[in-house]
Image (cartoon, rainbow, N blue to C red; front, side, top):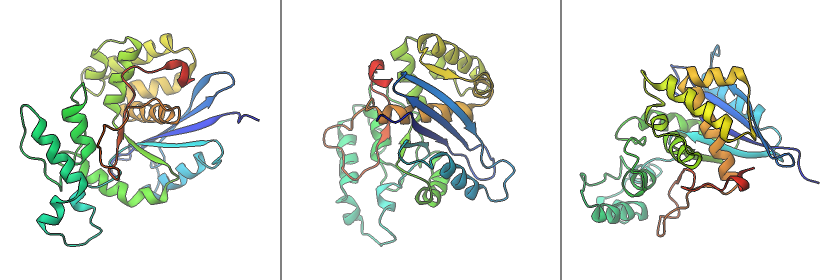
Length: 277
């Protein structure tokens, strides 16, 4: 007998002192072809132990493994290849032989307007692909050279305590591809996290989403949260991306991509919406 629903989670992780971490919960009802944003949870708020609060909150939401598809996370799930040596001291020649480092070197050689060489303790293959090889060239993808290091440290501590599978995602890329697939204007993905225009962009996307995707149900209280807070909006995009992963609607790894390297999941350019529901 078919399960009544399948649950996908999205985790927007913040630094431990800001307490803006948000978990989005999306339930899929395949028999009625419906998606429901069940809740937006801020587990850290009011807790003396924010990390424990995230763990407990995630476990409670994913308690029934028969219905749980996994959690998409907006935070680095792996370290750059030179830092993944499990505390071994490696020579520069040993680092250079690493499949991820070799792949990034090959990508660098193929870039027309080359940046500085990729650094194996700052860059990861998935970020290189999103920034330089994806059709859209996502220049603001999180990296260790910018904002990723602190979140990666926290995620390294948390991830083995959280119910898996965990999948890394990039919300802006998720938003851009969903918006293009649904015919929503570019203003939305360009400005959705902007201090001046973000509220307008998020509101427009959610209104258009409701019109173009009637199979998705959003509570008014959660729509208001997502319009007013980008952390709630990102968590929702993460959970929606986790559902797309579960349904097989994601960008495949490019040919030759290192098998052990983390992949950052984003939707296909042309999403098959019949398959989504």
